[in-house]
Amino acid sequence: MFRHHLTRETKDEPIETDGAVRKGVFNASIDMGDGGKRENILYNGKIDLIDDDNQHNEVKVVNGDFPPDSYFWEEQSKRYYWQSFFGNSTHLLLGARTGAYGKYSKTRPPKRFPPLSVFRVHKMSLTKLYKGAEASLSKLPSKKQIDDGYEDIRSLLSLIREHVTDDGDGFVFSRNEGGGEWTIKRDDEAVADFKKEILKNIPN
Image (cartoon, rainbow, N blue to C red; front, side, top):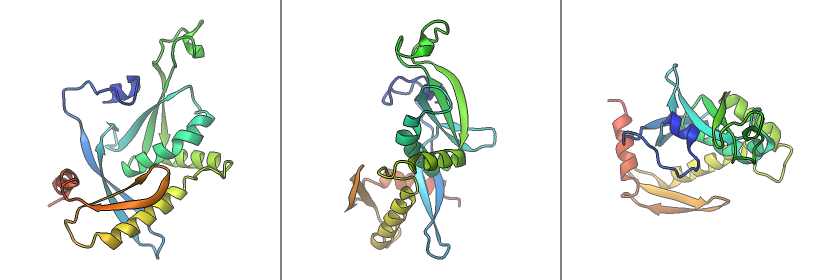
């Protein structure tokens, strides 16, 4: 899994493994802002990497070198932060990768690195990722800020609390990536596999 993430050429490239995709149920917690109440969020996703401290780390590849450029902070940091947050990751492992041959300086003399190859790995804490994104995005008030994500989650959780009233209820909440109103649909079949994963991971 680690090798795949740091060498794949497209996000849709299939994983070359023994056929087993490692998945886990992660528990994230968010302050609801109403007197200290917190809500737990169970997230079923693929496991990128487990470190020596038995902590889950997200693995991403970025084109370019470190420190990350403005494109990383302005366009990618929010998505990476929230993926790490829901995956209960303490760190993000970033692989710096060259671009296509001739278009990226390190693929040309004198270095001659192979195209689309990882040449440096950087481990970034989730706290540092948050602070970097916050500082960069604050200069662009027209863009969605990283803290807006917390408000979006609180709003969604309040909506879930309103509609999901009984244990075992299965609903799908969806909306367009740009925002807008949530579409709410009762669909027990669609969430059946997720419920099985949750039940398998709840301690007896």
